[in-house]
Figure 1 (cartoon, rainbow, N blue to C red):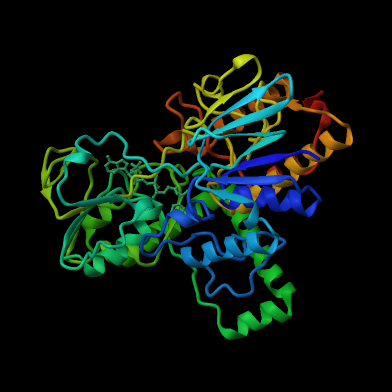
Figure 2 (tube, helix red, strand yellow; figure 1 turned 30 degrees about the vertical axis):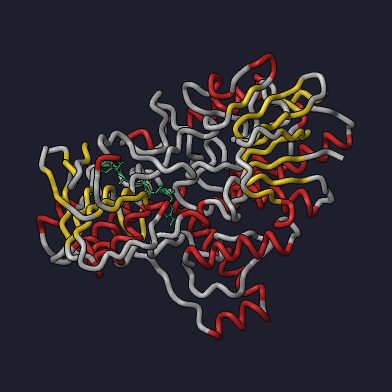
Length: 480
Ligand code: NAP
């Protein structure tokens, strides 16, 4: 029986564990550095945290949830959902908490991974699955003096719930997906809110609505109704993803909708101008909110169209050199998305380091398999993030492919599987060609490695990824 170790316990980890368990694999263990499972949905507890992908699609296909309270569920509900799936499929007891993986080394003689933890303990497994995600390490890019601030400060992913915003003057650094969700809440309580916006985003209306008892009853007793809703949302999101190109018709329509949303919600022409992006739509993640613009238009809110360069003991200094004195600073500056697995020291065949192999940006066959690293499967790996659509759909596709790899290892009594250099290179060439023609090259965004390579995103709709991963192609791998 193949032993499988999974790093993490977020959606990616649970997707793989459930898939393997459902197909009869039992030697599965998950290692979680924290004290609870859930990944980003455990960590991001800021006010208003939620998902801007509708919940019927932002859930496992085999585990619809008729109890969603609204179309766009909030963090607590999503976290409860992932926990309930882990419980239902018997995954929760397989998680070892407080277990931070610091290194993993491939042993060529035994064809196993030796996995080392921060407490110096070691476990050995046949197959190692990384499910550490792309957005789990909060980042404070290029801001000096962060530690010198004497007031309250924290990152949006590490929200300090003892902090009371009432009557405070607060600086919010960043205006991305997280900031858009919590700024309306802060704006209600703070006496003064200064939002440092390095670049504006395209923002679209969010077609959110609470599900009434009627919907819940329908979803429960006629599950096909929820499947139909999921299918409809999926079809719309596929068009949205295909339209992530400013030149496309859908892209142009999205641009019109976003500009109209801005004009409708913000009447002040100078604020409108500050909030109008100067790059093609789709290049940065398109955001959804009905409350963000009205919050920015409030009298107690100021938008500073500059980056923060420095923090002083009493405030922040913007790129124009102006100091803004505040009681608190909240960093909504995103994550070390290019880190991938760099925080873990991974050594493959012949002492090859993964960090070295990925020095110019991560790349992997189907986003999952890396030459020189046998029996290492990466979920939510390079080029599997989406500009539009549900990443859970992608994670399920990856899990199914990984399950096929484990099944074949066992069926053929193989000890290891390693993608061939040729297969990985051919895949990467085709992918790079598509990425070169994508909208993401036309502005700064977190999808790109400093080398210029777009390492985060999958180009286009999700169906082609599901098709590419549906059946494992044995000749793409060495089996030994
Ligand atoms: P983000 O979207 O990367 O936003 C970071 C923000 O910080 C950007 O506005 C960035 O400006 C700004 N910034 C960085 N350094 C700065 C500086 N020195 N001064 C001023 N501004 C600075 O990060 P996030 O909001 O945490 O979201 C990260 C990702 O998490 C999202 O893209 C999304 O994939 C995921 N997420 C998803 C949801 C959801 O609803 N599904 C919600 C939240 C997050 P620039 O734009 O100029 O870089």
